[in-house]
Image 1 (cartoon, rainbow, N blue to C red):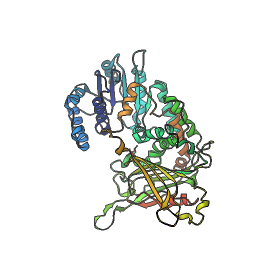
Image 2 (cartoon, rainbow, N blue to C red; image 1 turned 90 degrees about the vertical axis):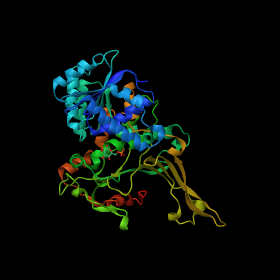
Image 3 (cartoon, helix red, strand yellow; image 1 turned 45 degrees about the horizontal axis):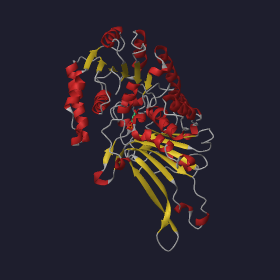
Image 4 (cartoon, protein in one colour; image 1 turned 60 degrees about the vertical axis):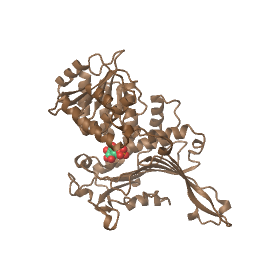
Length: 492
Ligand code: BG6
């Protein structure tokens, strides 16, 4: 059970709190992990009462519970009522001292976590005020921690500046930089899979692995986030953070323990071994109009430039593919291909480990294209599990090979409770475990790798490859792999 304390949510009147944070806190309470003496203060600028806010939360939690749809997850009123009795609203500006004076009065002497569910432009000033008001000050019996959402900076320089600014008011041990991918069970499972089993790790190196593909494909478009996305684009939105987490989990050395810094040291090391991306190895794409499906059933999809709040001639990428290399003993010469994009054929996040071919002396008469490559796919979402693809003998008198698959499906083995992905992250912060949070150096490491692509974007309009919505992304991304006779696993 977490120690007593208060969670202060700056910007808690917004969507994130309703959709994800409150359901996560409720789930933690149902699991008996919250202290009886746990309270929440929501700080926001809108005219609102605590009662009004709680009824908004109620609507959202009903929605959340309904979507789970089973009787086992009907709202537990006893828990919900007790939890919401301890929620209060504080109306105030994030940039006025009086807000922080009031907070000081309300949480004096208590443990507190300050959650920044606000637009990134407020991060710096909130932290400054936490420092100058004394709210960030810890004592022997009282902790003060800050959870900060992404985007953490918009390039290497701004991320460094934000880190430096935060570290003026806080110690690194007080800072919890969220990457919500680290809250996903299947992302955490990468480490379990690699380091708790004897048979993967001996093969996990350049002697046996030909290349690795990391995919985060989405079917959604830019939705209502046009204004944010125009200034961000797929590289900033997904690569230095989420994809680098997947990459570092896949490529890191085994940490000596699960202690936060032991794990983060290994991630930092692998990131520092990655050379900044070469411009020839980046493909930027943008979706144009297309459709999901064909024929009468087809759903027409508009192009990115027709979406709300998007400039007519926008040069923002909604897709990016890139090739990276890791200059260390384990991975030298093994390309890591990354791709992510919006409005693609399917929603699918996965890591595909392509193993080298066996020396097929025995099967010298089998045409190469009929040999099934050995691929191990770690499915992150929406399917959760692991598949292995390999060759087997096709039954019959002749010796023929056929491709087969072996599959482990998470949901078949484990009954998963309702989860938003934020439960572990919030709980870990309450108990002071930073393992699943980004450290200053891992954040900067991610930005350093993509910085050449960002510089080029700033200096000139680098080429943008258009792709029809609802399909697989730009042709040029296929060419990136075809140069070395490789190809992406299909999205379908
Ligand atoms: C967010 C990005 O960080 O991650 C979004 O800002 C993206 O643009 C989302 O859609 C993807 O997260 P998930 O959990 O759906 O893979």
